[in-house]
Image (cartoon, rainbow, N blue to C red):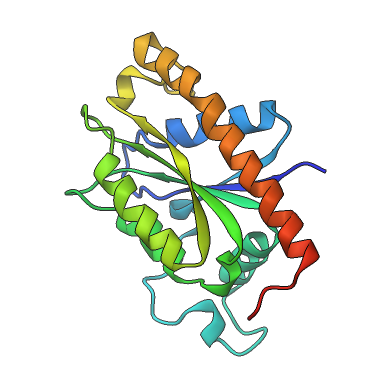
Length: 196
């Protein structure tokens, strides 16, 4: 059975470059046999958080929120692709994530950060580690950090230059760690129902 992995990306900017990294991750996970799917916060376009999914009476959540909740519940693992805005996470991705809670529980999450500069979004990635842990996910220790993104991936998400070579070398361990935790979490969920 292929691992179902949702790759979340959150920039709403018109000239966004981080989607290159999201596309790269989806393609590389698929090449390894995973059922990977891009979940683009801009395309999903949830409203600013007013009411969480669980706060709607059953069957009354907006259709796009209901569809996303179903996708999250059906996933085995998640990857969060995050840029860095003023040392913090992108508001679009954070807003999408905050609409849900129990739907995330008992699954591994991985973080891939990027920026236009040499810090590669790592400060945002560090913030995301705490956020995802608090939301009931097991955050794997392997991360990807890409920067400058325009010198690492082309417009189609293909590696270029020495940065692209470094990313390709790093991806194997990142994906291996995510696969290990995905298998472990799935086995545990099948063996024992979560306590709540």
